[in-house]
Amino acid sequence: MLNKIVIFGAGLIGGSFALALKKAHAVQQVVGVGRSVAAMERARELGIVDVIATSVAAAVDGADLILIAAPVAQTGAILAAIEPHLQPGTVVTDAGSTKTDVVAAARQALGAKIGQFVPGHPIAGRELNGPDAAIDHLYVGKKTVLAPLPENSDADIARVALAWEACGAIIHRLTAEKHDRIFAAVSHLPHLLAYVLVDDVAKKPHADLLFQYAASGFRDFTRIAGSSAEMWRDISLANQTALLEELDSYMLQLGRLRASLAAADGAAIEAVYSNAQQARQNWIRTIEAAESQKNIQGGD
Amino acid sequence: MLNKIVIFGAGLIGGSFALALKKAHAVQQVVGVGRSVAAMERARELGIVDVIATSVAAAVDGADLILIAAPVAQTGAILAAIEPHLQPGTVVTDAGSTKTDVVAAARQALGAKIGQFVPGHPIAGRELNGPDAAIDHLYVGKKTVLAPLPENSDADIARVALAWEACGAIIHRLTAEKHDRIFAAVSHLPHLLAYVLVDDVAKKPHADLLFQYAASGFRDFTRIAGSSAEMWRDISLANQTALLEELDSYMLQLGRLRASLAAADGAAIEAVYSNAQQARQNWIRTIEAAESQKNIQGGD
Image 1 (tube, rainbow over the protein chains, first blue to last red):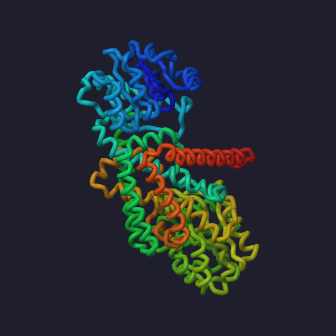
Image 2: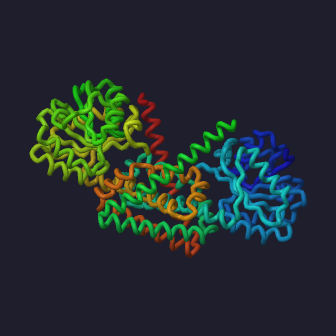
Image 3: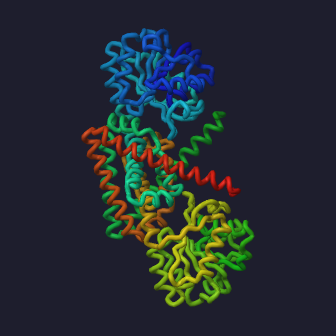
């Protein structure tokens, strides 16, 4: 049982963390800190936070665990505000979608206290934002990646892991660098591609007509383009190197397919489509097998 | 009530059409014609077709309506096989995702009988294929686009429209050219982009690791890459001109965003993401308003 946790940002990610811990009776008190007074008031109305902090000093005083769930570009500034007040018994973690930049910012902000920071990333989301989007089961059966630092104690890593497990999450460990390369490919690039497509369609003179005939395929393909533009701008910038590498790899393949299409080379087009179809079906089967295994083992 | 319909292809599209008409008691007999004996036998087991045709001549004899629901590249050959046996009382339509090429193929195959062909395109789908994917409510509340020819009689157009309305579909009319430009942008291009992404990921040496961390965003973004590779190869080739135009427009925008990312130009990145987020939210609101309007009017 955690006596006191602090969440910086009580939106979808931080709010769902708080609600899940409360549902699991794993926390006594949740203190909220945020830029927007209205959002914090709403988080209190929704039962996400018990107390809205009046200062960072008061917020972190005596806290067991601090979760930073704000846009990733703000992590450094938040850690710098925490550092003077950070007591030995407190563990800090984050929910940022990138890790290399967060670790660098944390080292700079926390200095000798860096051992108290355990970087994390829950792999869960919705296309909605803000306190009203928070739900208590967002993390059930989902992965949370921890990217521990050499300076972290086993006890501090365990405290963060146990909190996420209380939310229903499954803990994975990756280095920050490996994390960022993986998520550039399977998350950050798809977001970028979806945003560019919707932007491209929306800027055409006959956009209204186009949207009128867009159907469920377009809806699913572009779901991630409904995500917070500010957050994904920050993620794109924070993971710039890995994302550029994945984007270049993708643009190269796209250029090749364009050449096949221009040459009406049906066999080359089908080879790409068919490999993709097969790979996706295999992937879905793996997911379904894992889910059915979980059910057999009595999970929910 | 239609006495006899013939479906060429008893998979997702043709099978769902037959099941929906049967559910609405709008047809007496469904005759199936297909390349695969196993698929036709399965369609009969599932109650999609009543009779498996032994010849095209026998199939089309006395038919009120013929639906061609085979991969779009086969439409010309199928129409050529139908033409010698096509009687004056029979209307032929199709479900192809492209229309300009279908109209050209139909003119060549049907010659003087072209007036009996009413081009169509139901805007509905699933990522599954084959008779087992067919469901009786696939078309409920969905658009079916008709692209009538100057040679069509009003009665023939009405027969096709009524059949789709019996399936629950809402009829829209577009010219073949406008249809193809619209669907290149909102359907064919997204499919191409999703296929290329999954193919790109699947070909990387650490593909297994990448798929392990791919989550719901990746799943939705790539859902359309689970579609039939053969069908989408044909669609891509059939709508080559419009698709190349949309792809070039997209690649231009993608190149611009790449430059913004390489320059770490956060404002330029956010402008694209934010415009996309806003446009998608507006679009979703329009869909939801239309759906709630439909419910108020007593639809299901």
